[in-house]
Structure formats: C-alpha cells, structure tokens
Image (cartoon, rainbow, N blue to C red):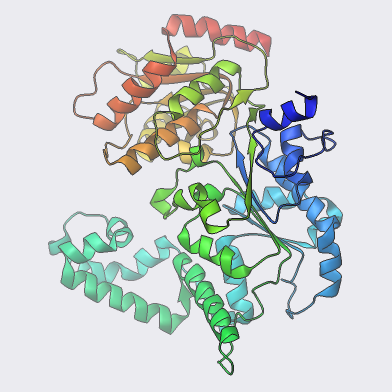
Length: 478
C-alpha cells in the first residue's frame, strides 16, 4: 500500500478524488483534504479539539481567493452589500466575532459572517416591505409585557414559571386553555401593532419569502417575492456547528441554492435541543444533498490520550450517531481522566483540596442551580460554567459536577443528549479531567445514570489524596 493510499484510508475521507499527498501549509492532511476537494457539497465531521475553526478559516480564505472571486466580479444582482462570494453562518455572536477576527484583513469586507438569526433579521430589515421598522423582542421583554395578563390567571396557573409555560405552548394550551388562548392571541396582536419579532419569526419569514420566490419563478406571471434576489446570491455558504441547527435552517440552505455548500459540526456535541436544535439534519445530511462528500477531522490536538480514549468509550453509550474513531495527537500516556466520590466533603472543601481557584481550572455544572452552589462555595465566576456555556472552550483542568442537576428523562433522545453533554464536558479538558459524584443518589435517576454508567465505568477511580498528588505533578510540569 502506498503512502498516499494509507493516508486516504487513515483520514476516513470519502472524497471520490484522491487529495494531494502534500498538506496545505499549516494544516494536517485531514484538514487539507477538505480544502483540496472540489466537491460541490461537503460535510465535515470535526471531533472535539480537531482544529475545526482553523480549517473553516482557511477554507473561507480559499473561497474568497478562488473561483468565487470571478463569480463576484460577474454578479451584482442585490442592491445591498449582502451579495458577496461567501456567507459564513455560525451558532453564536461570540463565534461570529472570533471568525471575523481570524479572517485575513483583505477578506473581511467580502465575507458575510453572521448567525442564522442575524442574517435573517438583516435581510428582513433591508428587503421586507416596512422591514426597517421591525425590532427583536427577547424572552425577558416578552415576559415583562405579558406579566399583567398572566396575573389575571395567577390562581389558575399557581406557581408555574411564566417562562416555562411560554416555552411549552402545547402544555400551556392543554392545562390552561382559556389563559393560553387569551395570552397568545394578545401577544400576536401586540407583535403586529408594535412591529416586534421573536427569533423564531426571523427564519419563518425568510423561509416564507424564499418559498414564494421559487413558487413565483415556476409560475409565469406570478407575484414576485420580497426575497426574490436572495436565492443564489452567494457563491459559497459555510455553516459552522451544523449539528445545532434544525429542519427550518436545513430548508433555508436548500432554498438559498449556493454553488458550493459546506457544513461543519460534530453530532457527538449536539446539546441544544432545548433551543429547538435537532441532530437529525446533520445525521441525515447526505439524504438531503446526495452529492455530499464526507470528511472526518478525527485527530484531537487538545487532550491527553487517556481523556480522548475515555471520551470514545463514553460516547458509544449513545445511539443514533455517525461512528468514528477519534485519536489523540499528544503522546503523554499519563492517566488524566478520573472519578472521585465526595463523601462528607462540601463544595468549599473540594474547592480547597483541589485548588480550583487557579485561572486555568474550571468547574462545569449541568444546571445553573448547581453552578450557583459552587459560586456560593467560593469559585470565581470565570472558573464556574455550565457545560453548555463551556462548549467551544478548553481548560487545563476540568472538574465536572455530577452531584446533581442531570436530567432523569428516560426516552432515548433525551438520554442520548445527556450522554452527549457528558462527552462535551469531558472533552473540554486538556491535561486533567475529574468527575465528582457521590455514593448514593436516592431517586435522582438522571444523576445516578450519568455517574454509574458513564464516569465510573470509563474514568479511573481515585481518592482526593491521590488527586492532590496528581494536581501537584501537573502544576510542577506547567
């Protein structure tokens, strides 16, 4: 077997053409394969710590200097500056800022970097009739506006949080039909009168405009859509963190009709179902875009091998995933993934024993309630995050709180997501991961499952005394 054929098998690259044996400068061969392929649709399955952002930035730079530059000179259909060779969509405003910052200066004005919601809102304000007058209302504002109406039904509703009822309209309508009818009707009237939009309205309105545009194009003499110039207005669309999108955003990509489409993500890190995200579009991507070629970024540059191996074993407990094998680039074979039982130790005592006050050490929690308990124990705000907030970050040492807050839902989708949340927490650690649990959980089935079936099985059992020695070794090494 030649060196090149070994590389192609090793990289798990499904590209029909063999990529060049030489890596793109500054990238690994796996990362280079993404750039060297001419496939019109690419799905990049990027493991934790695999250099995903670096690859996306290099790909964006390539797009802006390649065929799209000629396309850009030949096309100028939209009147605003949105017609650019590249649309780069990210999951959060923070990720947008990072992507913009890392793009070459010469490319920044030619790339449209935005979130799905940000892109749709700007498009509505620019092109939708009267769109310039619309504003976004967030959840806190919405609750404040609706509070007087909720209070009329306070004896019916009791102590159920208003935010919980608004986030679960089906339950609200079923349990409190009259209150739900009047509150939702008032809210729609309020939005219409005051030109307010919620985040879910943004993608809905944009999709409606795109559907009408395609319908009008197919029907001679049909009324044109406000979004008629949007479809095909970008040569290339790159979507980062695609595992956290949803079916509506998948339809958006279909209707946008770019010449090139790249989605990047990791189904093992899909943890935002509470925001409406759905991992299925990522898992089934090729069924929606049959010309898709898959690429795997399977080398973890972040974590020690024992952390990567623990993650591989842990994530296998979930179902409905793209099977892959993640490998560690680092060579140090020291034990680095541990679990320890908190006996009589309080959070404050654990904090002192493990020196969690240092800046490169973090406590991760499943819930805000548990985070608040650690903050009260003395952990600094910056050193104590929920797992969701820590996604995309890395730390020298991670202590994961498995004392409480994990979901006890037993349906397969919810259980799979809890496993993925545990995986995300584990893979934030570079040099040392510690899961903190307890010997008895009583009726807390979610916490008990995460502790017994995941961390006790796949992390090395240890004591606080042994951990203190291990932490001292790590401190001296750094």
